[in-house]
Length: 221
Image (tube, rainbow, N blue to C red; front, side, top):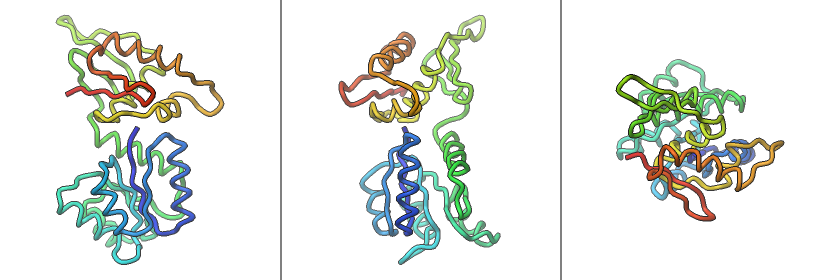
């Protein structure tokens, strides 16, 4: 699952974002000030930044500008109370990908995160050897001389494949995968997960690796 860096100086709101996104299955790192966020960005590779704009020491726009100039192209969503066009223009010119206004609707934030991550990783169609995976419909097809042939893939196997692809070659921890596949009202198990992994390995026997007791990773390069 995607790794997100949250920069928000309001400690309570910071914790709210952390709890919400963790429950959605994301790996979260949090910072209360730009300097701490900068240090974290050097220590870890993130898939997305969530930056507040009004911060101590320097604002979120300037921090992202600094990161962009260092070669960091990680997508960024700004969280801000600024709704004026000048601020929007500045944010986009500094390299921002989207804005969400305070007070933040968490469901809207989740949709924006998903949209930005979809743009980051891929086009809608991901090609894996002789297969094509549609990340929106989570359907798999095999490319043949006579045309594309649909491959039988369960809903959860499709969701699992997307989670592994979002890992971009990194190990996706078991607990994150389970949160992704099963809601809190469902019973998820290691046995059921192995069934879905086995289904995917029929098509991708060499790309999916198991780190026993830790998680799974998929390398399509």
